[in-house]
Length: 58
Image (cartoon, rainbow, N blue to C red; front, side, top):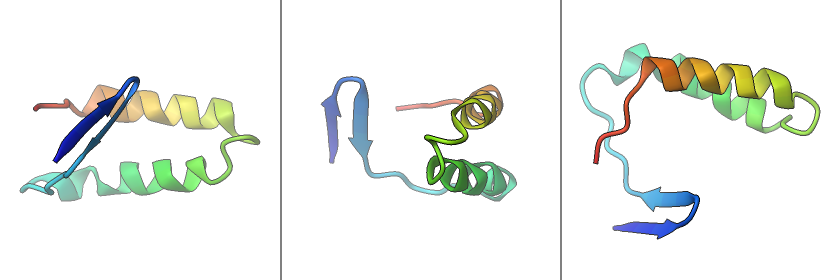
């Protein structure tokens, strides 16, 4: 199921072959989100890393 509530998208995500190479980026993203109020600039810079290394296909 996919739902759009701009600017958010809720979707079922399936890990495919090759995800393991990016798993540490996403784990760090989750860690930084937990301290977003204190570390907003650090999270933003890290998100740029994810955005540069990945591509959203749907």
